[in-house]
Length: 446
Image 1: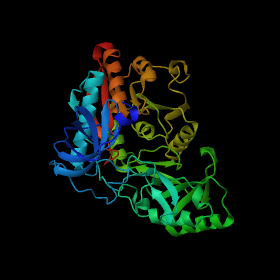
Image 2 (image 1 turned 60 degrees about the horizontal axis):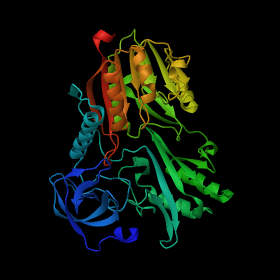
Image 3 (image 1 turned 30 degrees about the horizontal axis):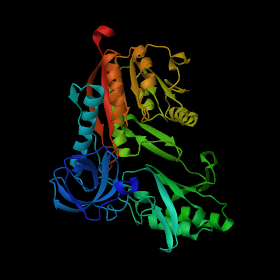
């Protein structure tokens, strides 16, 4: 039998009992004794689904009817939910989403790391709508629709979803998709704009328009008028990220505040900031609380970015060092420290994946360490953390699998106890799991 025949999809829908949620938020059932991942299916439900892909070890499907709904199913707030790929879990009650993310963290810690925290932290949550202050929107001129589409891509597809608004974008942008559509449609390069990035601070937002052909003077005037009318800063990107420049207004600065610490942090629209402002404020407060800082402490912040955790650390500790591989972020962090009058903090640019113990800034001991690595985790830097002999380590993670892997090393090789862990619902209605864990060095190893 040919490979083509083996992969042929049945025309008729199949009936599936959904028993679990996968890491990406799809329901998990079984069809012909093979795992089947079903978009739109929830645990405890019986659904009718259309198979859309067959693989050797699993199948993929889309729910077309719910025959027996689960107790946690809700009506999606967004009318575009079935088509748009920007969200995965709007059909799941928000409290149940939080439970799902906690379970993912617990399962990863136990299954991958072989560890379990001595206690669980209260989940960090906030208003689950209109929270997203960073986004990358796809753009496409569709002649058949007679307009430019602006939004996230279709679920599981290559095309831009045809939507008019978005209930997870920051309020400055949530109802502006049609405005952006008309704007791009009026440009001479309407067919050569593939994406728009958005960034929002506490008081203002910006867009970055990627364009593949040169803009005319008329285009630039349209963009300036748009900026003035809607109060959005407009940046342009003709080539790579290094070519981004601000068109309008003449002066503009994004920033956000951390009121508990009396801090204000400025950032550029392209720089990384935590996507959910309300959850980030709580996450920073939780991290500082867990570290139990004292005025005499020497603290280290690894992967410090533009100072999101470093500057709050500096309001409580004696001396703080922040380390980051991106020089532009370190420049912003240094400026933010100066603007906030913090003189007990220093920043260094360093590749934390390459022999950090040979860097000039590495001179243990440190009393407290905070780490907020990328999805790949912090395996390369763990020997440094262990050698620092820090009494407490707070690990902020955007990937529970690599957190679990690294937790095993800290516990079994570094003489640390995993005191507590919990999730932060940074991305409501998605399957993304942000988490925070507290490690304490065993007294005998200090």
